[in-house]
Image: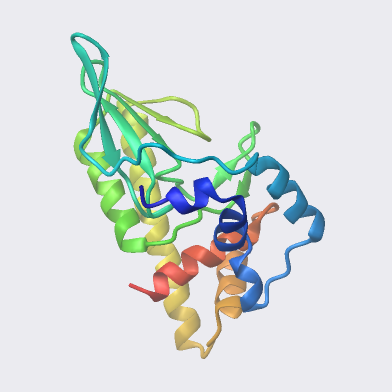
Length: 205
């Protein structure tokens, strides 16, 4: 439900989720904007918004639970299937970034609310799923999922440390801090600007 506005209105999604950086001095090429706008696929009215704790019945003896997993976005959701021990988390947790098929890191994690993102990681860790399924990583069995979540939490600590050092060095604006974080934690060959959201989230903690 908290992401309804972005899903229902492509202009809101584009301006508030993908292009808000421009007001802070970041440059987003026109062709990138056009590509994102095309990929959004059109406005999509929503009939039913989910919050947290709802269940979806897939069969008489099979229900999955809706989980609110905020941080990456305000309204990010996941599904928890107790019967199989599978947890579908999509983009709720993004380790140190998104990788290509050869294992090269491409895009940094975008975090809008750092405290919520960390709570989400701890919630997923407490469920200790047999399988963790995401949008950008291979299917992970329990041990791999545990390690992935630990790496994701550790990345937030590394990012926060970089931001604190930048502030101590006298950096005062978001672009300077984000550029420092990209240089320190990268490289991120694509959409490096996404790390600015995570830097801003650190400043709000």
